[in-house]
Amino acid sequence: MMKTLAIIENNILATNTIRYKLTRTLVDKGYTVYILTTGTPETLQLAKDRGFNIIDVKSSNKNPLDILRYVNNLRKALKAVKADACLTFTIRPAIWGNLVTRGLHIATITNITGIGPLFASDSIIYRSARTLYRFVLKKTAKIFFQNNDDMQLFLDNNFIDPAKAARIPGSGIDHEFFKPIPISREEKGFSFLFISRLVKDKGIIEYVEAARMLKKEMPQLTFEIVGPMWLQNLKENTVTKEELDRWIKEGVVNYLGETTDVRPFIATANCIVLPSYREGTSNVLLEASSMERPCITCNVTGCREIVDDGETGFLCEVRNSRDLAEKMKKMCLLSPAKREEMGKKAREKVMREYDKQIVINAYLQALEKL
Image (cartoon, rainbow, N blue to C red; front, side, top):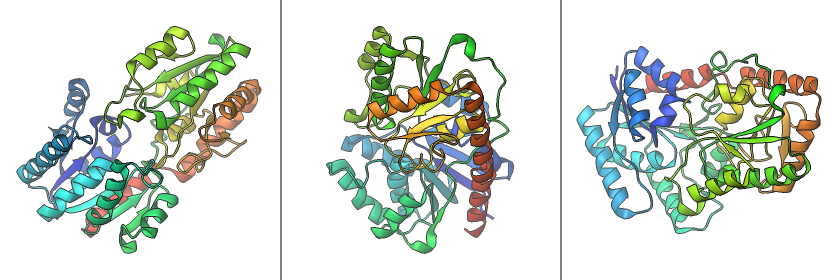
């Protein structure tokens, strides 16, 4: 039996949140696990305090020197820990991680957590990513996809061997951890909450524009944002501190900072809004639904599968702030009883279809086959 696993994560934030239970289960099953990632000193220390072995391999962007440094850091770390197998998550680890593990002959399981504009964009970055994907995944032992649309795109473009592909329900949801928290929300008025990294393809610009429209008509509404500034994305996709400060000064949104535990924020919000352009499977929507909160999101891959329009929340048109504002207005005009009914149906759905144990079992079975 293999003993040592390396997990390549883009940022330790994922290990501390959505992939904590998977990582903990692997450790409890007797694997020696090393997490190759990066993050702030505080978030890296939190993972260490939880008993995980962390190697800070930094990150990479489109700068060739940064990429070379990152690839070299991965190679040195994987050789140092003598990894028997490797797990990768998100696009950079999927590409550069598989490139390195292929050269070192380390069996690898890759999770395509989402593809963003991979096939839609004609930028040199995404053209390069498409070329690299076609090469690096050919020797990958197992490729998990979080939705059928992404998996079909990779199959249609001959990026992967069909026999190695499988769909899992995103990162799954620990519905005991994300359970409803009884709290009175009506006292502070109706509040919407956007939870995400502060990048534009999560729909934050549309959220702010919709909030601005609704503020004029319904000034008593509150629009809140939780999530970290995120400079690892392409510059054109990044929300700057100046933009955020301008929104706050304008009074259109309240920024509540970043957190490793979103539950208290979800509990005090009336509705969660994520107007994302595309997801693998949205963890925010799973978490909010599990806590019996109705959600508003876009009618796109990775979001529409979670929210049943009119039943557990509302779907809006992608990149359409006016349609988003209309759906948000519709939500706040519902009776509290109707929103409560939506929330209960949302929890029932994600418990039935997105249980985290399904994901954990898929990984354990894949590792056993290796």
